Image (tube, rainbow, N blue to C red; front, side, top):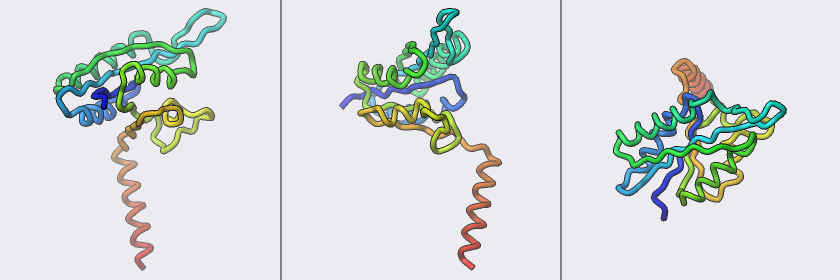
Length: 162
């Protein structure tokens, strides 16, 4: 079995939790995490335009996450690729195949269970296309949301007990 985990990151703030999960999963000596960002490009009348993040942002995030993993004692390799709009999931799967990754880890781009995009987000498409495990790490709930959810659950429980 492969000792490699593919950690796909974007430029969002939710990558830290996914990186922590990848570090936990790569706990054995010899395990490696490939930290991947895929730049998404649109090609049109005015040429090729990067649409995923600001120039250099993907590289910065990948470098920070890889350094964070190394500081935690995890072997980490950085990878930057590019894809046309809509082809990011397929590119992630191609890299997973190249690296013989045992699983793909990524952070959820939404706070909901399922993205509301009409064609599905990257994580949803990976779930449907991948022949290897895909772990989607949810965003951390904000303290106010968590407190509201807990009080609603508590009220529902006390209401059913009466």
